[in-house]
Image (cartoon, rainbow, N blue to C red):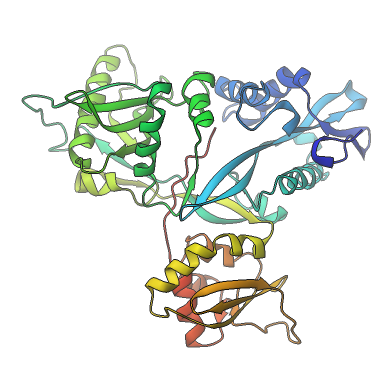
Length: 447
């Protein structure tokens, strides 16, 4: 049997284990498996994981179906699922340039079946499926170290937040009259939401693009208790939209609202809209706290390291959680560099080496790329011949270059962490610093 996109499955993995694509008939078994395997406390299963899996396998999701899941079955135990994984295809942007991304997700194996290469076998299949779709990058969130085994490096910020506590002096000051109101967003707001989402992402090097189909799914079709479901309010002044916010209160044990998105239209005050938001959430918290054992005391803004709201609220915010990181993998570095050439050319034109002509040899040791520049334009990216291992103008072993490529670290930070990463002379160092500056990213990742 041949799976979709020419990836051959099923496949025997030995000892009665069979790897195959999932089908719609597997939905409940896969959903139950993921809830049991991914819940933080096995004694308190997290139903939202079941809902998320069902949504992905339902056929309603914009890009993912049951057939994008792999399952490993133990035929000695009646075909029980012992490991699974799936692929979510998305579009992201790099400095505004769209590119296709494959998101491996919901990776899990029963403890007694681990260290048998089941995840590695599934990654081979998922990576092949992703490549067949033209996805130059794959990205995954997960536990420390593990995904480095499969070609990934932690090179884009994931999470990170700052908190607003109402009990802090000056943070709960009343106003004589509210100038704003808010209302739930609907699918009729899609053009407006696109503008507001751009404002939310305005400082982010990498963003997840949303088309109308994605907005509709996340607003109205994903299960209400799934992490993928958006809870959006439109903030208005005199009946005209000013801003939007996406937030949630996870459960009865939560002590704060989580704000995952917030954007303000050009010409409007970020500070005024943000202060309205924290006042309005305080009103909701006061009502909810009447019946809660754990009181809601704060708002946690989940915007990574940099966002206009952080500037707007300034020292009223507490510095809280430093970001974790996305695991990133670039399947075809030459193709990706050529794709983002307009961004690289813009940086070069705005920097101290505008109009540069020459060849920049990028030595990644396992592969090598000669970037040919003519009068500030990147005209080709091709392999180059070498006689010594270290030949090259910029040298970054393993996947350390991804830190620069995705703005996670600047040249000096990478050089400090990895002494065998360096430029062969001062000119190439300046070129590296110009082409690959440090830039934050805050990616809305679940759909």
